[in-house]
Image 1 (cartoon, rainbow, N blue to C red):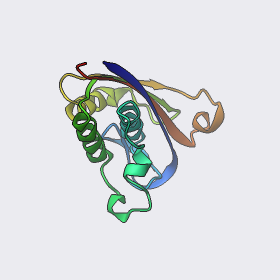
Image 2 (cartoon, one colour):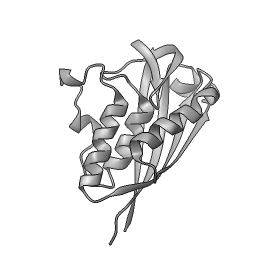
Image 3 (tube, rainbow, N blue to C red):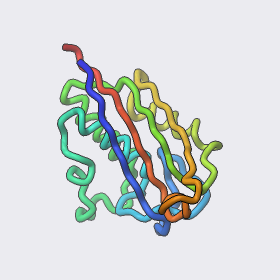
Image 4 (cartoon, one colour):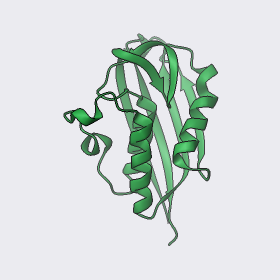
Length: 157
């Protein structure tokens, strides 16, 4: 049995912390958010939660809960992967698109892939691709970063 999930996250620049994407700290202005604002980890988590029939990331780890202030989003993703596994699912693959006008992401993509693979498990194939906003909209004006992730979950029938 297979199921596909879609995750999406967007954060504006202006956070007090470092810029973290896919668990990689990248030089540049940080994203605003309650946790470390890792939009990649957030999008991947929601892509996994949906097809497993679990609540979304914001429901599981609400911004109103101070326990998650500044939390590592990769740690939250580890928790999500464990919940998905408890439902009998394993991750087949995850495909991530990061829409960012800045900073340049190409030098950090391999590290993001490694971090995500470490969390999702060695059987998961992970793809991470950067795209630019080309001056269009909030992302194109460099006001923030948006991320889409698609995940395939597999379970023996």
